[in-house]
Length: 564
Image 1 (cartoon, rainbow, N blue to C red):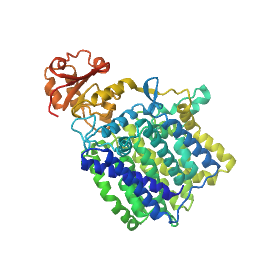
Image 2: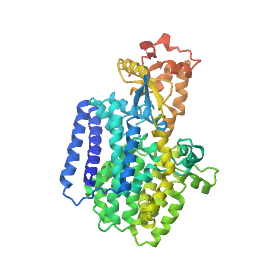
Image 3: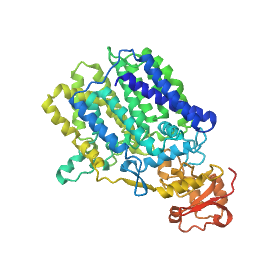
Image 4: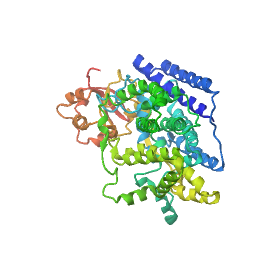
């Protein structure tokens, strides 16, 4: 594969998703004709990008033995994890990966909410009166395929697998085989415990710095596009600003991939923007960067304004010295989490200072600088989520580390060094790959199908009051809740304490239950086994005062008669 082919595919995805969003806003909601039109436009733009730039002096992938081995390992990871991302077993919807148990539910919520007719710009499906500020580009792209008839059980695994391969290709362009291995086996030294106890499990999962594929690439679907497009932009900007003989992408392609990034992954956009500023200003190439900024500024500005609710969500950026170190020894924390990476970085600093390669210094020192910043400035309510930024700082460093090892260690010993560096990450991956991993159940298929069918009979898509579980069938079917899972609300920067209190009073049958339902814009109440367990003392006054519009073994839905 060439860089132009990779860029053409990503341009097709970005343009299809943007067109789908614009058509949904014009039509009021996502439609089948609009989805088909947007996807066709994506094909046209992707092919047009390839057609116009195919004759450029292009860079192609080259493979040595190490590249073949790590690429095959990446292929196995994508096959095992994505084709068991969302599957049925013993009458239940399952997901293989523990880290994906909660994430698959929120992504199904967004996808099915779009498919079932959410108004655009969409409100948050689990928070009354809140605009959707989560970067939903990949979920919208998925929903367009579902809207034209491809089921979730097909599109989620296939799309994940294909995007995973694009990430592998982008890593190969960015730092050859070492970048693939450093991403794939990105843990500290916790996995070495397997040599003593003989038990294969993800020892690193209890530490803050976890396996990047298992915690970011697979469960957090925005990274499917974010990693592939972000790495491609870094490759192109390295060629444009750090190398004299580089062959960067055309400026319109760079600008549009950068400018459309917020819709897919806002953390990636922020990191890329920081690197662009550091490289253009630090290298004295502001003039060369202006045309790229002009292509990016309009889509980026509009998307950032929409996704921050016109900067009402900037409160998620906060100061916290030490990230999640707490009362631990900083040195012990670094060694425990990052292991051999710490001495390797110290050698890399010496290597880059002693060499005359300016490129190495412009990768290494900005990477170390930003990594340090991310230990003090939090970019999400949940501190651990800063790993989304740290992962990018880490990836900025790996080409230098790979070059240093290639130039400093001869092949027989280099293989041994790779084994030592990546053994722990290999233990983490294999623990999630092996057949003994039976996966985790999300919801019973019979209940899910029955509730979805019942919801389709409702006269409108007003919000439903339910128990707040992350895998509640109502929200998985794509219908908006009055108040959803508290962990999602908090992690998205939504202050929902008041709404959660009102929901509790409503569901327990407070005397003011009708007013509370009106405040939460909840026209319907769902009452099933989950609600019975969560609100055992409820008086359920709506059972005698509201119309029951649907019922079954799964429970009942009551229409409170509020205006839609």
